[in-house]
Every structure is written in structure tokens, then in C-alpha cells.
Image 1 (cartoon, rainbow, N blue to C red):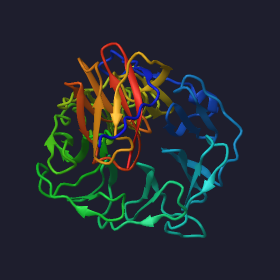
Image 2: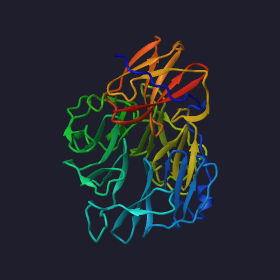
Image 3: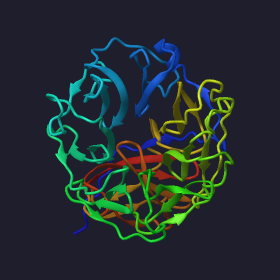
Image 4: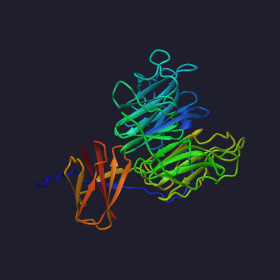
Length: 427
């Protein structure tokens, strides 16, 4: 018996696509609002950007860095060290003395904080030591890790659970259907939200590779930096979950000594790699590489607008909100390199329709529409991240969604003129 079709309100989505090929930067004003000489941390949850000054002042912007405020907050014990946006909460690593750190999170934009160290290694009561890096793994899960230990849990759970990772961890990342951890000559994967880990048999990486940084575009692409070669650290690409790797042209774009990769960030087909600057060179802005094509082809990134004459520190990290790219370097800086990033919902529009069923769905989803010419369907998670894009060739299209974890997703239906959306529940 055919499942009953379920229609949900159709919503038009307007996309702002930048025409820039490489980034051109401008300060957002977070630094001035903080009143500090420089910023030490930044992160985002959706359109809200958070930052902390060297004077421990917490600032935020609810409109992608356009306007900033320094709200009155009940800060956690200690001094802010890092900020990380994870699903519905903002994590902060707080330095409470010379050696020790605590993890805290906020569910109300930093107004109040809850300590979250149950299950983490302790040096003094309720204190995680050494400082934990925190990373959102998708589907409401989060990991906290150092080079020696890694822990996971579902957001909202009280206890952190130690993983079975048996390597010296250099970095972790996630795809929609797996988590990955890298170490010396080893890549591990977990397909059950961190419960168990097993090594991946890889191809295309050098013998005895020493992976340093790994990242994903949260859809289907992995990027990993490897030990220095050809004058710089190499970046490899995998499009099959870490099994096969291809060397990109990332190395050799800079002539100074040791231009190694310091951070990686991917969104859509874009990949950004901050590069270690030339020693003692404070006349030039901090360098980075960029590739914006499906088959990566790196070039030197546009650093115009970034500050010079202050330090030779590298860009510590990138992050995005919608189609805007952000980086932290004294202030929070923003650019629009050209990726679409996340989508933003505007007004209701009943002129474009498509049907999906069954909904909730287990493995096979059917899409029906009379407007299939020059159209596509995009699967987007609740964080607004694009997971997959499927061109529509007929009025009826079957899509395999078995690889998705249980949860809420959005199907974005695009034609040349209009964009519509429906909610999909994966069982």
C-alpha cells in the first residue's frame, strides 16, 4: 500500500552568493566592543558569533558580526581560554590555575554557564586536565579530547564516556555517517557515534604517514595535512570516507622556510588552509591557501584587509556563518569567498510544491514534483549544513537516505527561479 504523502509548509529560501574568488577581509568590530588589546577566542552557533578579549570580556553578535554587544554575564570560574559552538550550546575551556582547566557550556548565549567535567580525567576535584579540545560531531554528539585521551557523549547527557581510541590523537573530524581520528600512521573510524573504533586500510598516503590535521566539509570530503614535503606540508583529499587519498597541489606555494599547515577548514567545495608565516616577518599579513573547485587546486589566498606589523602568528582557525567566512587574528575578521554555506529561510511561498513520502523515512525516500526541469534537491541538517545535492531528472525521484543518522533534516528544492523546503524525519 502506498504511503500517505505528507506535505509540510513550503518555504522560499533566498541565497546570497558572493562573486569573489578569494577572500578579502574586514574587521567586524568585536575587538573594539571588548575593549581589549586583542581577542583570544571566537566561535559561532548559526548566525550568532561569540568572542572573548584578552581582558576576559565576553562579546557577541546576533547578526553574523555586523553589530556587537558586551552583555552582562555570570561567567564561569577562571579565565576564558577557548570557545566552541556545538549544536545547541557554547562550550568554553576555562583556565582556573597554572595547570588546570574546566569545561563549561552555556545554553543562553553566554549569560549563564554549567560545568561539564563528569567522566573527564581529573587532577583536582571536578577539573579536566590537560585542557580538552571540544568538537561537535553532528547529530547531537560531541567529543572532548587531548592527544592521549578522547571522550564522547550526546548533548544533554551528564557523563562523558572514554573512547577505545588507541593512538596518539592529532585531530578528529566527522562525516554524516562516521567519525574519524588520526594519529601517526593510523586513521580510525567509528560508525556508531563513538562507541567503538577500528582502523581504516588506506591507499594513496605515504608509507608511515604522520597525519597532523583533518577536517571535512560535513558532507563527503575529507582533507588531511601530512608531514612536510616539497617545501611545505602536503594536503590530501579523500572522497570515500578516508579509504583512498589523493595528493593536492597545496605545497610549494610559498618560498619561506617551513610554511606548514596550521589549520584546515572546509565548506561546500571550498577548503582553506592557514600557513605558518615566515619567521620574524611582521610586515606581511598571515598567509593562507584556498581552493574553491571540486577537484582541489590551491592558490595563495587574498590577505588584503588582515592586519600587519603586529605579529608573525598564523591564523589559528576559520569558521563560517552562512556564506560568510570568519577568522580570528587580533579581531574577528570576515570575508565572502563565494561559497553558499548555509541557507536562510525567508517567507512562505505556496507557488512551488513538491511531495515527499514516506515521512518519517527509514531508507528510501520518494520525491514527486511537476517542476523537475532544471531543478535539484539538497539534503540539509538542522545546523544548516549541506549534506548532499541530487539533480532531479524526472517527476518522480527515489533517494537513498539509509546513510543518515536518525533525526530531523530539511529537503531544499531548487529551480532556476525559486527555492522551497520541507522537513524530513529520518527514523
